[in-house]
Length: 264
Picture 1 (cartoon, rainbow, N blue to C red):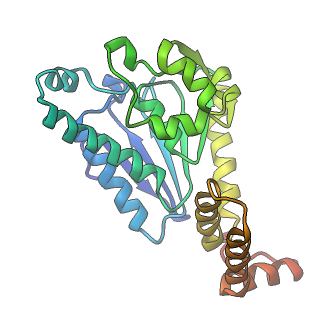
Picture 2 (picture 1 turned 180 degrees about the vertical axis):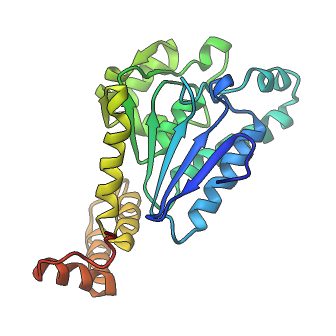
């Protein structure tokens, strides 16, 4: 268990890191201290060779309600330079989560507003309860969802963003699924089991191959399909095939046994 004031971090024997925002009484809204703690926790997780997957949760009724009210009151008196430095902190958090080397999963059991939607979008996978709700509420306050926008637009698409960025409408889990913000929606009582099934699927795969697969997506997503890309992808699969893990995985398949990374 962690020593953070606003978070709980647990890492189990299988390498599953569960990071829980634990300000339930404040709907897990964040301020500069929470942003700092989340960023530090993510850095530690990313540097831990034993961690194979991150599960991000929110304690209580809400996943994350975005900015904390008291933090917003303090920000109201900030100068431009203070606002800029403050915004860089949130931008750094989103970047740390989006660039985490191992797969990340957001478990959205309740409301995700503002920056909370950013956290969902930064994770590789997101699964929601059918009671969850979402809102990009910034324009209601005369603000914009700026530092989360690269991740949210990538997750939900430009067309959906053109609506929800400017209307600040609240939308439900079914709509989040339709626009691609979350991967699946289940009943609240089935959410944990559903997530565990996905975690188990990840753990059944080659640890180094999983990391390489995530890097591969980052590399090819916006690259031009040309000869350089073809050669690079051929090199990457050759590297994996020739590795100890690649040889073990293929050998286990051919010999009809479990690979050595699968824990009983």
